[in-house]
Length: 226
Image (cartoon, rainbow, N blue to C red; front, side, top):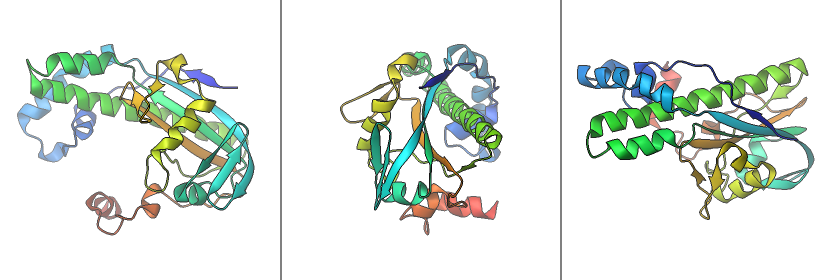
């Protein structure tokens, strides 16, 4: 049985929005900071955050395939990230399409503001997905179960086509999200992920550990230095 969450309470800052644009707030110009600040109220008016998620029992684990009630996931990332899982939490999050439509309208008249609004949408989606991870973590804590790393179809080692498995379990249309033939989600500001749960998980892993670019990734180097 799936559950829907729409009660999200968060406040975006100009720093969140700049990061959503891929801009280092410490290096942003005054104009960019002012623009980011100027779209905060409009962003909150346009955001329609929602998430749908479910918990499925793992029934088999063989080579690179994890089977569960209703389907399976396969790939090298799946094999490593979900090893030892007894259950999988499958989730889809979105901020709706109102903000995307507004960005499209604004792009010709004020591209700088449109880009700030788009960055705000990215930041908003991140807040929604983090809130869902917190909820999932709290429930696992209550059950005295461990959680593994969050993984997403489309990451290295997990083909994007596996989105079809996610949407075969979750009726994304109930929160306004649909899957295209190429396995992309609409609205674009949507994300799906799976978190393994159980008593004997391999902990201490992250998606970076499985990425072939990990030794030359500037983002990873910055994170390790932080």
